[in-house]
Each structure stands twice: as structure tokens, then as C-alpha cells.
Length: 183
Image (cartoon, rainbow, N blue to C red):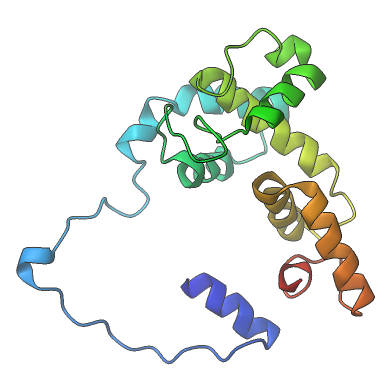
């Protein structure tokens, strides 16, 4: 939330909130959080698989942490995660699962689907690559990643509609932050 507020403040959309120290928690409510930068225990099981898939499909320069954060957000590293519309580590919908298996038959065609963690990780990495390649006109890598992740989460059709709205309102459709995100 703080990051979103700072981005909005930098766009002039809202004023940055004044820093106020949060009240001290009651001793009975204190939870011990993992050390900053520590990999969640649930992620350790899939670390090698994710690293191997990212390196294979994206090369050595792409940070694996980007994909790890996406999986953490999508499923909390639970291979059996299910929502109303999607399943697995990458939270692929049944339609996206079938479509990815069709466009990447050698990589995903014979896989068990979204509830197979290896399949789901590979599908997420391949789908991110396809979305990234489709957003080459974005202003820079930060905006390109934000737009690609919005594509993954809400669908490219919605993002394309938002880009058209931004352009028609005189906004910059090559920037996600301070641009397309507001539409």
C-alpha cells in the first residue's frame, strides 16, 4: 500500500500520507515475521525448478525473484491452491491452461495441467515471456513488466482497452505507472 501511495503521489494523483508511527502491538498479538529478504519456507521446495525454468526460457540475466514474487502473490507457493477461476502455483484458468498447452505443445502439451507444480511453473514462465514480448512498445522495462503482469492477472484484452482509454484521454499509453493504470 505504501508503494502504491508513493507511486500515486509521484503522479500527482494523491498527496503522500504523513508518516505516523503505528501503535505498539499488544504483547499477545505480536507475530514473529521472517527476517527481511528470507525466502519463505514454502518457496524453497520449488526454488530449483523455478530457477531452471526462468534460466532456460529467459536466459541468465532475468532475475528469478520477479517470478518468485509473482508465484508468491498468486498462490502463496501452494501447488493445490484454488480460486473461483484458477488453480495451481501460477493460478492458471482452465481456458488459459488449454490455450498454453496448444501454443507450446512441446513444452506443455503432455503436462498434467495447472495442479502439477512443475507444469504450472513452466506455464507461468512461458506465458510471462509471451506477454513480455507483446509489450515491447512500453517506455522501459519497469512499465513493460507492470503491463505484462497486468496482462497475466486481468487479461490482455482488458489492458488493451485501458491503453486505448489512456490514449483517447491524452495519457501516455507507453507507461503503466502514471498512465495506463489509471484507466
